[in-house]
Length: 211
Image (cartoon, rainbow, N blue to C red; front, side, top):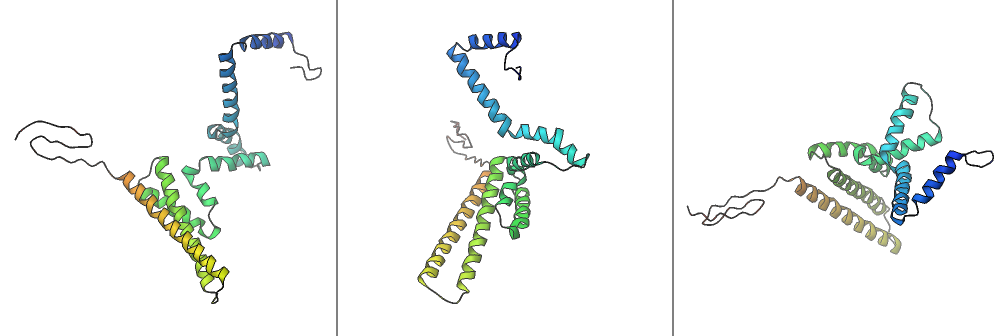
């Protein structure tokens, strides 16, 4: 488009006419509109697009050119850290109190190794387990600090009651998530039973065979 007089060239006018004619069909118009919106979303929120930009532009700027990133480039890095949060644990560390961030990172790495977690679902359960554990620590500390005041009041008693509930809730979340992960990682159980008409496995099959 000619930016000076806002007029289209003949080639652009032809393309516009062809486009309008093509959009007269309802199904085509709806499909094109959907594709356009999906492409807008992909450009802004798709982690793959951000990773390509990082490797092609930002990484060399930092590591080779030794230049500082501008605000927009820093935002791309930050968004991307969140985007691969299931892989690197950044989203979990970021919501953790500073004093516990090293602990969280260490726990996450060791638990992933311990349970041999390879899928996103498994790693999400690990995050839930750690989050519940950290909540337990935080609420327990608050409860301890309150009881060490050496005094009581209706407000303090109510606070202690709420902290006790939160500790109990965090414990239940921790145990249920841990049990779910253990069940998910448990190998398939196969049982063979010799009888007149029986073979049982993961998929039930029956053999009518007499010994």
